[in-house]
Image (cartoon, rainbow, N blue to C red; front, side, top):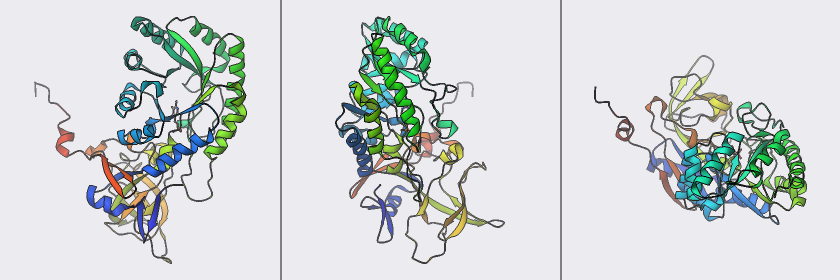
Length: 421
Ligand SMILES: *Cc1c(COP(=O)(O)O)cnc(C)c1O
């Protein structure tokens, strides 16, 4: 459920017509709905009701300060994967005790900043990383709380680029080696082992892989406890998928996911952490773009938009589908026609959709890409010297630019000329 609906024929974000935002900020732009962000957060919170839990929003999905602050004020912790994200979360007002640090390649400097600033736990992904965290903790006179990310070798049945829980993936340590690695961690005085971490992939549309992974985590918890480790926290990662179309696609609901967690792990009495990213932000954001030209090709018409693959890479990178809807609601009975919907970048990959049925559109019309809130703005670039597009947050009948479009001077002046030129 989201808060992007037509009212009197005008697509709105909550109570604000998108056309009004476009008139103020220009196009293209990203727009997020506060009510939708909070609703998604609350769905997880309710799903884990009755268990000791913390929802650590995986902020790599959408990391604007205003989004982080909205969620943090609702009680969210954060899952960060770089020191940049750590500092962003702190700047948005998230205390270190509510930040977990994931990622396969944490550098010594990143570990140091988080240890000095305060951290709930590091989710350790390898033995060498464990040694480095230990050394830095000892040097700082601190003890670093850690979980170890185990790779349960389950097939998440998702797109290959976002599957992380198979043994061939670079993530975590093989679950079969867990006993040895936990013993090694326990022997390092700079570390305090607090739990187990697992994250098997993203955009999972079936609960079965979660169930397989969580059963393995339950078994491992009991085994590690028997081996003398005080396993009291389970970080179950993110990955719950979202509907990208309004047809019959229906991924599991947070409530069903929560029930699965309670069923597979509830008896262990552990504190539960989850790290949802996409489900919180994905359907809470749209990208709005304008038609520059309608071009007739051989047997097809192209809608050439002012947004491109640099603004939303998901179709080019993951073959992702985004519903694209006109900002002015079509009159009933209008016959849709197929369009190839493309951006202006000089790559054939700069294609958002092929033969997409749309009502007839003309230059100057606005369209909205649905489900663009996660892995949208954060993955954008300035390829082709196209400025990063602005982000806007709506709250009821108010809206605010939460990241302005840079000027061309700002973009150009980021480069510096060496003295010999
Ligand atoms: C990407 C990621 C997440 C979030 O995944 P979603 O599919 O966006 O929920 C959570 N945890 C880790 C470790 C990740 O890498």
